[in-house]
Length: 422
Ligand SMILES: Cc1ncc(COP(=O)(O)O)c(C=O)c1O
Image (cartoon, rainbow, N blue to C red):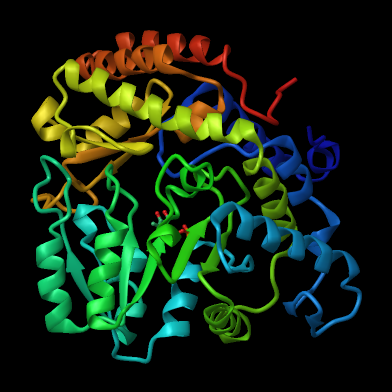
């Protein structure tokens, strides 16, 4: 448990903000699908002297001296990642998920080459080719979609047709807001037919893949997996690129450094090693399985109570509620209403959303963070009821305040790891 005496004495403004954020996390419910709580051990190593060290290069091949211990932690992070994800090679230096994806594109593509990824309103991520990102000035992005948002099944026939026409160099699996499993084997077959690399961005589902409760794309012969380390994997903020074999790994290493980044953020690399160590323990399997149980239970509860979910359920940690169909209000209004009672989630596009990205039709909910706090199926029903009550009484400030007090009281039973406010 960190002690913040020096910070408190030196910088009261930042200390006050830190205290406020600690209270927000402890007193509220986190349903943002991409967020989680790190363990005290991960938090300790993040705030450590590894911050002070420059380590450009890779273990055994650095541009600066004094690397005895940085080499040790980076090697451990790499070895643990390889075991966890059955990878032939791991690069643990990407500063976050977006740089991991960009470094992968530059490792495998020439300017003008095509990447085929999931349509953004069907669940894909900005880094899979949204026009606002710079990568779209360099590479060409084409899309695949769900055949039917009622089931969530991807239209693999259309994927194949577009792939044959556009000849992508990368076929990209992965998403930020898709509640179903992908058929990696079908995607690999399509990629092989057109000579494309297969890349999975498993930023959201890495924890469940590490635990073996969701499919590992490497089992279907995928070439590359990119991920963040801070979502369901419950590690520090950061990214990682895994390759099927060492040959591809060499291209990735050159692309990350010196191609794209400078020195690695060594306290984060060390923290990744600690988090991977935690993910290798049997308890993590139980945790990851519970994330999905909770998600499916919450989805079933919401549907039973009249909510319309995109794909009518979930196979993973997240779900998307169509708020227009469920409540007659847009996602943004649901987000602000729930903020008032201490439940945090985010507004989100639904497939082919007729509304704008800043004012979409849906909200996205996820269970990794609340599962870390020890919540199980019965708590999903309590949370579901809070959500529905708040939306029903959204115009009644007194009722919302009453619910806020109840949420705060409820949260007291579920400590946030590493955060104790005295
Ligand atoms: C699928 C996917 N890829 C990449 C990213 C980018 O990660 P970061 O925010 O760490 O850059 C995200 C973040 O939400 C994501 O969901």
